Image (tube, rainbow, N blue to C red):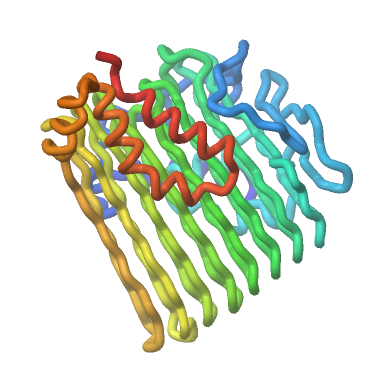
Length: 391
């Protein structure tokens, strides 16, 4: 479809309401995608924004006033601005709802990562995206293609130049992992607490390929992030690891889908979150196993720790299984800080905030242990502990 046709499609689609099942816990009252200036033209950073990470990289790119600017790229790897004519663009994230249609019609900046067959990168590729104008809209895309036998890591960091900025961010991420390739994709989000965030992330993992997905959510005011992994070839494996922390009046919404299309595939999903003040979170996870996907092994879990009496979380796991030789399980828990643990630590001289930080670190430790890249693992742990106020 042309951009004009996509724009017409966007205008004809309704904004989701809480009457829609997948939006039951996320209220968009008062939000208008067209009410943000520039539609991606004026929201680009006009100064540096703080980074959560200290990385040695094989290549890095930033979103500047001129668009995607590549500072360094590995030899033989296409690490460059994304263009409208790429044959895989839109093959996974189309224009099926209000927000994906908005992105498809009006995105202006994108990154292409295409790693040739057999290429292995020892250091990660890094993309920084930062919103930088009050009231701005930022719409961008990322397309990743891992050819057979390649191995690499892509880290995307999303932030705001100022904690006081309000804005609208809309991202689309498409990842194609060919036979025998391995991709680690890390997405760390620390937008301002006045930014609406909508993300659609969709991956296709082919025969004997592996995708390791790490998501960290710390910022934004409201919105929804969708993550879908298609296990499309025999022996395909995907692992999704998530950690989030919300406070104040933040609302985080994650919608995940593990689709098993081929036999002997594995998916492993683990999300943990901590919430304090009046913050809220919702996670809806679905494992679907198609009729021919025998020998599927799939697991999903979501666990939340409430650090105040007003915080709330909703977990909605689901299974749709059309094959008869599978192993599919899920788990969800919601709990408060153990008073005995808190008393034990405070009785030994720790302040309440110090004790809470230790409890939060312990709660997240098994999720952090799943993160292969050490700087990311350290950054996630530090970010989680930093959200506990000092005494």
